[in-house]
Picture: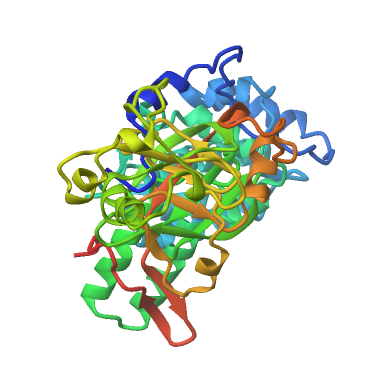
Amino acid sequence: MRHCRIPFLMIAALSFAAPGQAAPRRTVAARAPARVASPAPDPAILTAIRDEAGGSLRRFYAGRGYAPLWVQRGRIGPAADSFIGFLKTAEADGLRPSSYDIDTLRAVVGAARSGEPDAVARAELMLSDRFARYVRDQRRAGNGVRMVYADRGLKPKKPKPEAILNAAALSGDFADYVAGMGWMSAHYVRLRGLLARADKAGESEEALDRIRLNLDRARLLPGPWTMHVVVDASSARLWYYQGGRQLGTMKVVVGTTETQTPMMVGTLQWAILNPYWNIPDYLAEKNIAPKILAGRTLASMRIEALSDWSAHPARLDPASIDWQAVASGARVIRLRELPGGANSMGRVKFLFPNDEGIYLHDTPNRDLFDKDDRHLSNGCIRLEDAAALGRWLMRQPVTAAGKAPEQFVPLPVQVPVYLTYLTATETPKGAVFRPDVYGRDE
C-alpha cells in the first residue's frame, strides 16, 4: 500500500458526488480570446473556396461562411511559410516529409502570391488539408509509451480535420499559433527542437533514440489551449495551462525508485480541505507501534485507530490494541492522523479517481523543496504551492469552512492531469539527460 493511498472504493464513491453536492461539470475547454477585427475577405476568394472545397474541408469552411484561414489582406500570409518549414523537418516528428508533397504545396502557395482568387483558394485549401493531416499524424499515440488512462475518456483519439481546423481558427492569432506549434504541448515543442539540434550536432544514435522516446511521451500531452495540469516525475516539477498559456509552475515531490509515481492520465474532480492522513501499514508497524510501546500515546501524536478501511469506520480504544503484535507485523491496524497544520497531507489534497490511490496534496515539510533530488514520496505528488494551484482549480482561495475534517469540495471545472516522465533536457553544451531514476528509458 502506498504512503498516500486512499482505498479505491472510497475514491470511487466520491468521484460522482459527495453528500449534498452536485457532481462537477466535465467541461475543460478554455474560452478563446477576443479576436482583433480584420479586413473583410475578398468576395471572389470566398466564392472560389466555396466552389473548390469538398468533404471535411467543405464542412469547416461552410461553418465560417467560406472565410479563408491562411489569407491576410488578399494574400497567403506568413503562417504558410512557418507551416511548410515544419513539414520540411517532419523527420523530427517521426514522420516522412514526402508524405505531404511539399514541392507541390510550395508551388501552389507561390502561385497564390499573385492574389488571383482561384490560385489563392487552391493554396488555402491545400494548406488546410496538409495542416489537418500533419496535426493528426503528430498527435498519434507514442510508440512504446505505457500510459495508464484512469479516465478512459482522455485516451487519445484520431482528431477529425474540421476539429483541428476549428481549434486553429479559434486561437486568436493564427500566425502565432502556427509559428509556435500551438496545437502541441510546449514540452513536445521543446523536445522536437532538442532532437533537431542534437541530430545536427552529431549526437549518438543512442542519445537520439532516447530523445525520441521522450518526444513520444510528450506527444500524449495536450496543447496549452486545453486546460490541464502536467506533472513530470523526472524533473519533479508541475505546470498548469489554460487559454493558450502556461499560467503557473512549481516544484513537487514525487515517488522514490521503489514507490514510483506512475505515468497516468486522469481528471481532477475534488478538493478535500482539512484532510486526514491515512498512515500506511509499514509506518504503523515500524514507526508508530514502537513509539506506543516506548510510552507515547496516539493522542499526543494526533492519531486515531480505526476498525477498518470503510468510509465510516469505528474508532478503537488504543488500550484495546495489541501493539506488540502490530510492531511484529502480526496484526495490521488502520491509523490516521488528524487534520491540522502539521498533518502530512497539509491543508488540502486534490483527487482524481485511479486504482493506484495517487493524488496531489499540500505538505508541511517545506525543506523537501530545497533538495535537488525530490524523489522522496510513496507515489503521490506533494505540492510546493498548493494554495496557488487551488486558486486556479477552484477559482477562489482555498479556504475551509471551519475546522471540520475532510471537507469535500467539487471543482467547478474538472481538469485533466497528466503524470509523465521527461528525462531529456538541454544545456549550452547540448542535450543531456537527467538520471533515469525509474529505469524507464532502458
